[in-house]
Length: 497
Image (cartoon, rainbow, N blue to C red; front, side):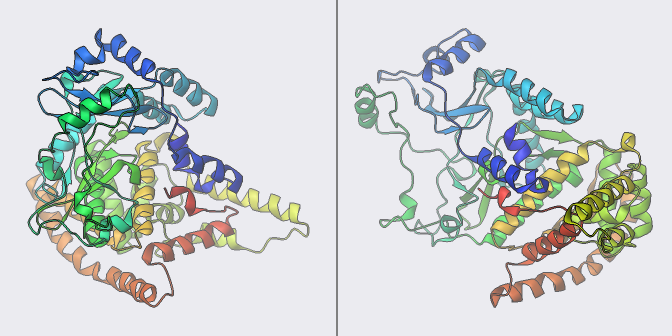
């Protein structure tokens, strides 16, 4: 719950931002007795019986670590190698979490739609459904198949509170050094496990020795960092541009083409592996928090984004009015996460007018009234507001933060806009006539998008000469300036880590 709020906390006062930033740290893990109890309650079997593992080193049986490899607020993950050779991540929900989440949602008094989505994170059957659906989407999209990987879920070993999935070896997105350091493996080799390749088994001798040490914190999983070389300084040898291109492509397809959107794409949920071709493979995990868009909303959102790119204010106004939004100008800026310069700027101009109060308290009160009026002007009819846009905005903000963290290697705005336009051609629920008409408009759109490259490469040149951090940093600075005029202090650091 805290992590979900933390990803949205950039508009909170600084003291709250610092508090919620701590939510990204590893949570304490539950004792093995608690883990065993959850498994017994859900399956009526012990971990040894369910997973066919032995904690005594019995020949022919699988092995499992009783100390979690990762622990978050909702669940913790244990490594195991099953009797049949499958290497798995066993995600076990913490016994107290379902009730705790209910209390949290009640205490924060969130919108019911948000509460429902967040509570679904405690249902691992829902997560398995989302994971398998996304794997199917990726497999059937030629532009992403082979570039994106979704771990397999093993249903026979899963329940509402236990999910068993394929174990993933990879590099976290936040490890820029390892992503880009020179590759020291073979020229035609990929990193361990790439595209589902079998992983080497642990040494029988090492397993027996560790288990007989009577140390419940035994480490049984083999170390698979040989590709880092003798000095340990090797990496995947990847270009950050290729990594980020894949990421923006994936989440754009989710929003504009499939309508199934992963709403928690922070760096901890993304692994990167190296394919034998030398290209990156993005592995997406943790599929608990999703929203699903109806075709009508998805088509509207495609057209909205496309119109933003071409300053088609008439179409923008028509779409957002249907969403209960009166002021398209501020809403467009919030969507792009940069100032939208194609509108009338009426609300922003009003907010920027000099304050008349002589004392600081008077000016603060006056700004507060202006801000309330600005929000009221923007949100006209809340009953029309598509609740899905709350989580879509969250997704886009995190992806923007990821691109910014990696140094803005890609033109995220152009990639996103291009997917929006192209999806109006590729969407399976449009008629042939609609697709044909949209295709002609898409070709024209691609020509218009060349102007976006000018902005992007100007920012890259400034970045090269040490005069900026890239396109995302420039946009962040502009948004902070506007937010400051509105009485809001934005802090990007809460999105890091």
